[in-house]
Image (tube, rainbow, N blue to C red):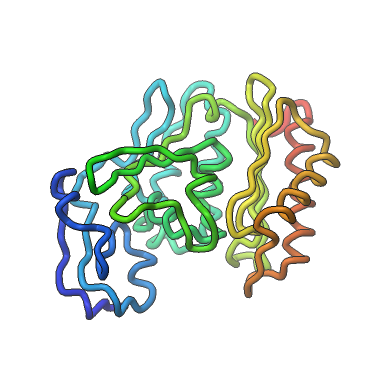
Length: 280
């Protein structure tokens, strides 16, 4: 799609230039991979602020965990090497596979863009909430704040971004990366958009995290001090969704069907992590 209303593209190379770019101004959009931005008409846009000129490293590893730049291509997740003790590492590749896109789009679509579009089927959102991910946000006034992804994504296409803010990075803590994980993806067609994404994580200290995306407009995350029984997990998820965002409905799945397949997946991931020699 040609954005023929755009009058200027501003490459920003440092934070000072970003502050001067007025990213929160009307008619201005932040450009990273651009796979969503260029996929539909945007007649209101006049200026694009190009973050790729920042030259951020796609990903870095430290004692704190894995830090993914907002401009990191989604395909790069599959290239992050495993580290000793990172039992959750297979979830990175699963996230890439869960994104309904061609290899060319996966190579251009970015981690930050996938989270910021806040689509229910966002695969990076699913990865982040499963691993206690948080976004680092840069404000136009030079401020920095961090927000858990489960609090950042507010609904279908809605986030907690403030005017002028941009996502700098997504951080996945070492503690979560050491947990054992299990995941399930369901869609109406084999190569269709995700209608339900369920992830679970069992931590070294016995803690248990259960996350549902795609079947709901925003992430639903449940935390337990110890692994719940499959029956309890199913009841808790059903109640949390009904009391919260409700089951999502669009051409990729009706609410009743999404509820049924999600609850089945919830029981399966809990059982998988409870088995001796279950998911690594």
